Amino acid sequence: MKTIDDISFQGKRALIRVDFNVPLNSNFEITDETRINAAIPTIKKILKDGGSVVLMSHLGRPKSGPEHKYSLEYLLPTLSKKLEVDVQFAEDCIGKESYAKSKNLKAGEVLLLNNLRFYKEETAGDQIFAEKLSKHGDVYVNDAFGTAHRAHASTAVIAKFFPNNKMFGYVMANEIASIDKVLHNSQKPFTAILGGAKVSDKIGIIENLLDKADHLIIGGGMMFTFIKAQGGCIGNSLVENNLIETAKELFVKAKQKGVEIHIPIDAVVADDFNNEAIVQIVEANKIDDGWMGLDIGGKSRSIFHQVIMDSKTILWNGPMGVFEMDNFAKGTKAVALSVAQSTQNGAYSLIGGGDSVAAINKYKLAEQVSYVSTGGGAMLEYMEGKVLPGIQAIND
Image 1: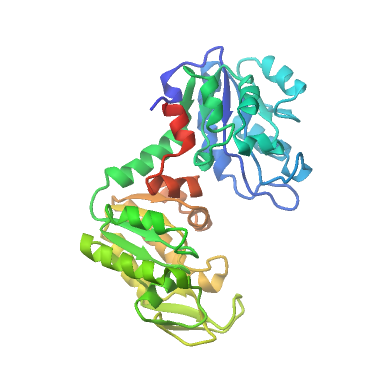
Image 2 (image 1 turned 90 degrees about the vertical axis):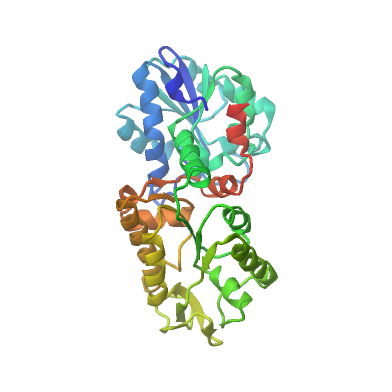
């Protein structure tokens, strides 16, 4: 695995694909800086070596051409402050102005190109567009793990124009190393905690984890498909009826492989999907019609805590309930605290997936777990055993 530590960037212009797809509020202020913070060490290493940096990223999903609300210019104040450099900006990622600015960069200077997705050629993986982007650098660095599962022009196709000068930044290298540690070098017992709304999003990862994990904790909306598969009554809770048989098969496979699946035994249910709804705690498999499960209950939290505390390796992907609403956040918070506590006791913990990362940040526990992944979809696909185009392009 070739990384930025393998060369000196003295006198070199590094074109870095970063993942600056960050959330902005109505005033175009960044509300979560996690992805920007993650990229800073890579950029600083190159600048410290005596190189210059050209940054490229996407932001949001512009429909057709440039849209002001998706301009990367809103990131300039934050980026300049964190890098302690007056970051330059190009209104167009492949326009004359952008080439002039990147060509004239001096050592220690940084240029941010505007949104790659203002061109449909980016997501189409267009080779001509990739070649145009490649003219901005002498060296190509991919540090955008969050888009590594996409065969886009700037993440996969562009690498062929740097046959001997392509490498991973620290984000990519650390993501790969962290996931590989969990998947291939995990200390036992290994517990995977999976939550979120849909089983369909997690089938691949569950299948792959049955060969690696000792314990599988299921929470969130997806738990009700498993509960119904066991014959439970789930009221108006979220369910994927087309996956009932799949859930039954997973129970059988887990038993055959000696993996213990932990399903919540109690649930916080409400008569409506809002924080002001009437709430009660019932057995998770005895929910009446008109009620929906929106979090795991106290008994389940206690059981899960013990499993997590007894673990040496922990993977967490997906919340236990609708943690955005305070009345249904206790399960997710409890799991977050348990993972942090187990980590302090020596376990290795990997947190991945947008909602899990949001939860860890919400409860200010990011510094108390081993690694927080920046790539939701990319992490899931990598953990399913899929080859990610953005990784393969550097390794080829």
